[in-house]
Image (cartoon, rainbow, N blue to C red):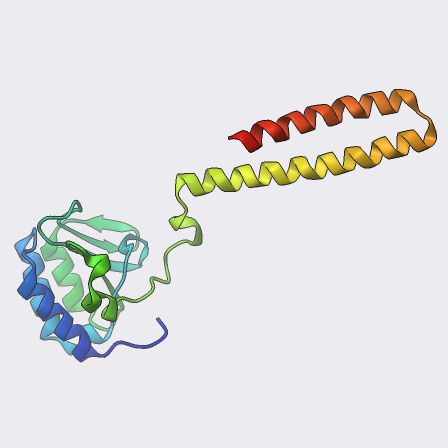
Length: 188
């Protein structure tokens, strides 16, 4: 949240959003209209993604997207009761409120991008996909095997320098296994 977004910009965006999208839950419209008319709340409101990680957040979805219609999060507790959330918003106007809006092509909306802020509560590894995690694991395995290979090559050189045929044979067998594992991982 580096550059603060003005209350007027937030109001303009919410008005635009309400005029262009039909929401899945009518209470969501009431809440957004309430925000437009209460600058003290909008001053502490932040539009973010992944609102479920925030200490106090609201998720609102428009028709046409695969997302829950409405959710309110507070201190790791989630409710779908819009009246309870409205009551909390009304009573705690000075507390930060994080808002996630789900609507068709939200990631391509310049208007949404203009008010969207980075969510400071999202864990660093949250955006890693299963594919990313698998790739990172594979890279780690390759690095460890490469290190083992280098160590074994040094031990082979040492065995040759010392004329230790038994050590040379043992270490050579280990090196062969490490090279085979490296080849298998590299093929994946």
